[in-house]
Image 1 (cartoon, helix red, strand yellow):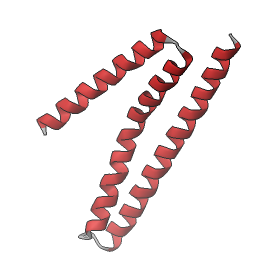
Image 2 (image 1 turned 60 degrees about the vertical axis):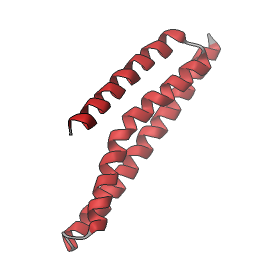
Image 3 (image 1 turned 30 degrees about the vertical axis):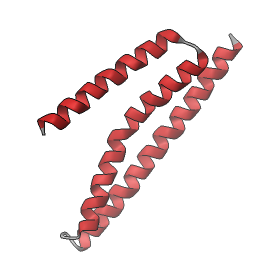
Length: 102
């Protein structure tokens, strides 16, 4: 039981760091892009930073699922491995559908 508690604690720590890092990077890129856009609306750097900020923000939950899969495999918790792989599959189909419809 102790190994499971340690594994869950490690998972929560890693996921917390990942989410905070993703949100901070996204906010920095979006803020800088907005600042550049306010002074020069036609600057390509503003558009690039705004896009990067949005992509990082959208990728953060996907990375969270990938980290969860890896940690559950490490803990040998096969029910949650299967569950998170199912979530990852749904996310993958959704992204594929969204990109093919665009």
